Image 1: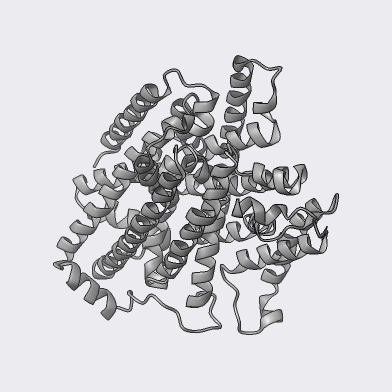
Image 2: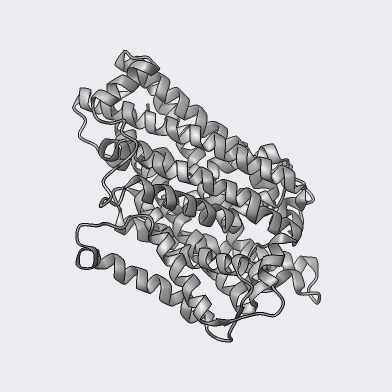
Amino acid sequence: MSAAVLLAVIAAYFSLLLAVAWWTSRRADNDSFFIGNRSSHWGLVAFGMIGTSLSGVTFISVPGSVGTGAFGYFQIMLGQFAGYAVVAFVLLPLYYRLQLSSIYRYLGSRLGVAAHRTGAGFFILSRTLGATARLYLVVRILQDLVLAQFGMPFWLSAVLVLVMILLYTLEGGVKTIVWTDTLQTTGMLAGLVICVVFLLHALGLDLAGGWRAMRAAGLAEVFVSDPMSAAHWAKQLLAGAAIAVAMTGLDQEMMQKNISVKRLADAQKNMMVMATIMTGVVLLFLFLGGLLSLYARQQGIAAQGDRLFPAVVMDHLPAWVQLIFVVALISALFPSADGAITALTSSTCIDLLGLQERRDWDEARKRRTRKAVHLGYAAVFLLLTLGFRWLDDPSMVNLILKLAGYTYGPLLGLFAFGILTSRTLRAGVLPWIALAAPALCWIVDAHQAALFGDYRMGLELLLVNAALTFGGLWAGSRPSMGGVGRSAVAG
């Protein structure tokens, strides 16, 4: 299919997003931007959050990982399901009881201003790195497939994509994203199902036959039993649960959508429905990855990892499948960046600038400040996307999970300390502890062979980081008279 046709499809898709944004942002104010006026429908939020949680990295990297890791990624997903239950029945009741617009305000009410700002700071770092890594992957593929054929350099492609995202998020914020994410999740999942059906047909297989062929080729193994391996099942299950709690329950982008739902019970339904659908969707992505590997072996395709899916579709499949792939790809692109920029803007305005408490500012000045922050994050996203272009890791999903181990660990330790204990922090200790824990993890990770021999630590680095943070906070605290921590949850 010609690049001109693909570009026209991208333009039409973006026009649809702009129409949705215009419809949802009419009469929008700062409350609409930050929490959607607490009027979002839980079903829309649940469905849209699937697209945000999966993103272009899942669309490209998870199928690409099957060739070397079989279905091992599903171990993480099983752990994540348990983690989503913790978010639904431990964290959401806390957030709703305190009527939070930013979840890091809990840290401020429990542990003080330094904890509030430290939590927000680690979220900003985590989400900025994770979102730009996801954004880079899909922009790179769009560049290779379409935009480079018009002589457009990578940096200009990245600018174009970010301008498109800004145009439909600048006014409506969460109120808009709840709807655009629903549209984009539909596009991504439709593309997934169609690609699976077509590859089964191309291989002359049905679902059962595809599964048997994967098993015969050694592509369908789920559980890794070697305790020395970084992918051992127990490590992956624990890490998956921690990743779900940290990257969803302690992440302002994800929780901002949840707390835009009016009632706690609906937000909990949203979380568990999302977890159930996500489990099935990830399994289907892995099944797609097995089919891609089988097809690549049959056709002698050498591409691996993140490059496998695009290589199979764009070089070997019919034009109409290529068109569906591109629509699904851009549907995966936008949720990975639009919600992130919106949530980062919200956290910076609420947690760091105290925008909601500034009674001396009128609504117009607050809106100008919010827009300036939003544009600033777009510029940061551009710079980091160009940085990932230089790095060009062969499997972005592994890189993102690795980064999460360093940046979400202190957040997990902070919230665990606040919820599980009633101790009071001593003045001045928190910033040092929050920086020391990731630094120690980096040292341990870099010297695993010397420290552990054949044993390899994988994604449980997140738990080690959180445990170091928790231990440091315990050492730097004293008993409290009021029992603030537990009472906040027990309510």
